[in-house]
Every structure is written in structure tokens, then in C-alpha cells.
Image (cartoon, rainbow, N blue to C red):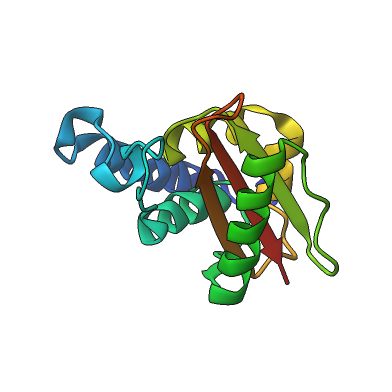
Amino acid sequence: MNLKGYPALARIALAGVLAAGLAACSMGGGGGQLSPGLSAPMNQPGAKLNRVEALFLLNDFRRAQGAADVRGDTVLDNTAQSLATAYAKTGAQPALPAGAVAMRLSAGYTTFAEAFSGWRAVPADAAAIADFTAKRAGLGVAYEPNSSHGVYWVLVLDD
């Protein structure tokens, strides 16, 4: 963000607002612990991903990168789930679905928070997640106890 054309007072005010926002984020109880929906282990039969909390975390990251929120999409969720199930059964990374903006894959992380942290730490993954053209998102996770990684994640983004 280039603020050179703005008066010094406006830049100071903006800095103050940003600092207050960061302080508010760091204060609110919970002691830095993740919500159960983000830290629920998926390495057990019948485990269910809390898609609402996962989408909230995804959108929080996107907003921090200057991108608009994506909305959850049941068709993309079904696509991502099918891809994750196939990925878990075969170990072969699936191809990007036709027309999708981006897809991120991960294997071995037991919680969404871990998988998302892994994506966020890789510049190419972080850039894909923050793609400005993405408007919808679908998430899939599959557990295969006899596979090499156990838990497989797929995030599909579309316009």
C-alpha cells in the first residue's frame, strides 16, 4: 500500500487503527488456543471437518493478503471430498479440476489447522489461496489408515 500521497496525520491515524486492531486480536481470551473445530483430529473413522471454522480461517488469511472472502460451495465441497478420497486411496495427487482457479493438496497433517499452516508457509500455496479471482471454496479431507500419510486434504478454489 503506497501512502506517500497522504498527509502525515492520515498515515499516523491509519497506523494507530492497525495497531489497535492487532491489539484487539491478541487480547480476547482463549490464550492462543485453537477452536476445537480447527484442531479436531481427522485421523479416525467418522471424523468430521468443521467447514465453517475452516472457511473462517481461510478467509481471515485472504483478508490479511488483501483478497476478498470466498464463500463455501457444496458442489466444490463434494468435488474436493471426492478428490481427497481418491488421493487417500491411491496416493496419487489429483489433477486440477477443469475450470478451477486453484487447488491445494496436503497429506499427513491430522488437523485442518496443521494443513492450513503448511499451505500458508509455502509461498506458492499462500499465493494460490489468496488468489483475487477466487470467489468460492470447497474442502475435502479423507482418512485412510493403511496409507503412507493417513490424512489427505484438498482445497479447491473457483471463481
